[in-house]
Amino acid sequence: MSSNFFAQQDLARRNTRILVVLFSLAVLLLLLLTNIVALVSLGFVDPAVISGIEHWQSLPWHLVAWVSLLVIAAVGLAVLYKWQQLKAGGKVVAVSLGGVVISPDSADPLQRRLLNVVEEMALAAGTPVPPVYLLAEPGINAFAAGYSPADAVIGVTQGCLTQLNREQLQGVIAHEFSHILNGDMRMNIRLIAILNGILFLGHIGYYMLRGSRGSSVARIGSGRSSNNKNSGGGILLLALGLVVIGYVGSFFGNLIKAAVSRQREFLADASAVQFTRNPGGIAGALKVIGSQSRQSSIANPNADESSHLFFAEAISRWAAIFATHPPLAHRIKRLEPQWNGKFPTPASAKPDTETANKAASANTTGSTNTERLQQALPLLLLHSSRQTEPAQALVCCLLLQQDDNSRNEQLRLIKQLGSVSLLQQVDQLCDTVATLNALQQVQLLQRLMPALKALPQQRFSAFSQLVQALLHAIAAPGLGPWLVSQFVEHSLATQFDPSQISKRYSTKTLAQLAPAVAQLLALVSSVAGDNQQQQQAWQAAIATLDFGLDAKPSVSLSELSRQLPALLTLAPLQKQQLWQALEACVQADQLLQTNEQALLLALALLLEMPYQTATKA
Image 1 (tube, one colour):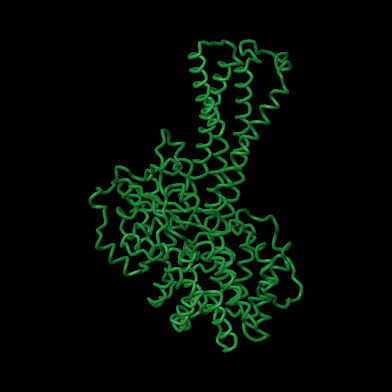
Image 2: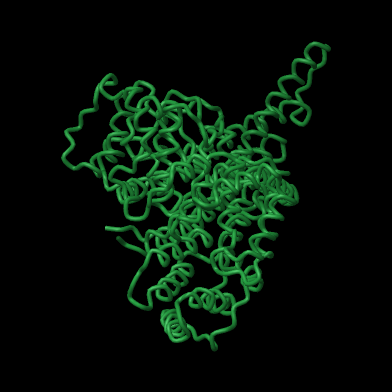
């Protein structure tokens, strides 16, 4: 049964609201504890005489107000600081965990196999192919991080590469793509920032404790001593109290993280099977983890704050209630109800290098759901899509027009704004690109993302200007070139400009964005055929909406480009309604041709909407 990824994204959104409520309650508890510690340690209150309402009335409430204000400010600043660190998206998380990006054209057999699997799963999931980071960790683990599919990254440990066979690796990667489509990444990255605020008071206490110890040593060395709480003992007691509060915060923080994370892991396991059509792959990976001495542990010091991102338990916990993942046996039983409960021996689980080498060169899709969508690309284009300059050339080829005037102007621009070398690459590749059908062209665009995201900032800026110039050189740009340019300007730009990342959902409804919706539907219906077919497509689309639209507007690509960001940030259930309208528009003639599949996939990529739900193969 297919997952409704729109519904799961909405559930993740509601879980985020619950997370905020739990965070607020935790902060209130920390406020109370901090005030008690501050009043007692600084000598304002004697805990032995606190009894009755008259003592509460005599408390220094002005001090309570100041302490509360300082606590809220400290927690708020800690959250904002971490939020600022994470604003660049998934790549920041990957680097903080020790990840090193794998070159898209890597020739290492194990890395090549991994990159091929990631490409397959991206095509099956209907997302851009993300950059892949390798963590030098012997444990078997992986993660997906980012705010949206456009800025997502996949991180994989060395243990995954050396200990898993291709089928098992495919199950792990499919699980991570499930997190991308289920909307878990955005919730998970917010969880990192929020928990940093809860734990911050403990960090303050720790540094105060270190400072007060140093001060005590200095006083002893100088022959001075003091029994005054305000000059030494009180500060030390306050520091100890804050450390204890830090542990309390850690307790509740880990409890919140575990509660939010565990059920989403079961969901991601189930969705992974939907992608691969093979429960044995992900179940096999979990069995191999259970057979290893290091299992899935991550040694990086930042692993604790990011433990909820991983495929399996990254940090050992002293109590099951703090575990961010369900027990391995429970996950395997859900995937394979007949499992006998025995884990394989480590020797039988280890894949051989020769098999990995063959799998890497084959670039097969196995039994994955990709077979329904993926159409084989010529090897020349596959190899070119993994290198930065040829990848730029392929985008230029996708924008080249057939009429001589536009084409000659575009070639001139490639030489002028790009380089002679880029023009030569375009010349070598354009004939092969011209043989692709529409679906192959979109899938080629998906594959280009890792190589293009490897561009330096300055080269990306020049490339972006070239793309826009090539689009403007077309007398009457159609839907195809516009989609290519928009995809580059958004999905690629997230690597270089954090403001392009869709970090939060809008509160607006489709009805409030009616002009933008009308523009998009008018553009899609304009490719349906003759005037009668276009009107039929328009009517089929607006019939799915729960609000009325005026007459079909004339198409304006510049206007739609301006309004597109508002559609991109729609809440999941609003996007689902928009998607149903787009699907009805494309399928108004009751047929789904290859070019219509390509159009739906391109729009899903551009608007960051799950394509899988719509097709329900």
